Image 1 (spheres, rainbow, N blue to C red):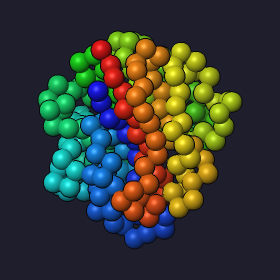
Image 2 (spheres, rainbow, N blue to C red):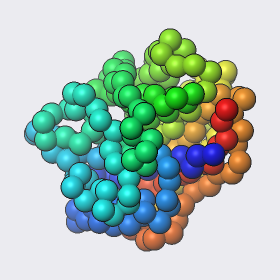
Image 3 (cartoon, rainbow, N blue to C red):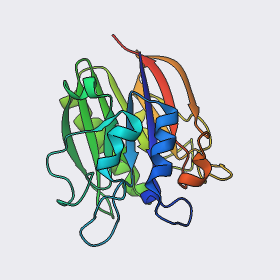
Length: 227
């Protein structure tokens, strides 16, 4: 059994600032996931320096970041603002692959491959045409690099349930609940898509540990059982 999660950090600025990454780390520690996909872990401009300081992660959460070969820059924690944190014993058996994505804006996904399970962290574009093209690319690549046990999770940036997710017809799509904007959530932008035969034990949106102040998104989570 694994507890997986996704969390858009909004560059650790809360809704409007200031930059306070310890708040986000407190949220992650309270959520206590085995694996968590993070979005917006780096600042957007210039050399794209890390917004979530890597030196604080292990002590605050007990997790370690994925070993991404080729982050956005030498100052970045992630690739296109994304990384995945996991328990150290999982990291020992993990490999990471970057997945460039099409679209109007520069975007990319991260595939974390574990024995018998592949986790894909994503942050899709703002335009639906881009999101459709990005999901089509991700699902096509997932079928080539992964076995049957696949979980995709992240900020899908999709406001609708009835359009934009056509490429996920072969997956079970879960929207645990409204996660944006964090102070008064109304939209389920953060989602999980998983292989149908994986067993879903529970899911939800986490609002503890001052999560409503730490980012503009609330984290989502799911517990799964896989072969």
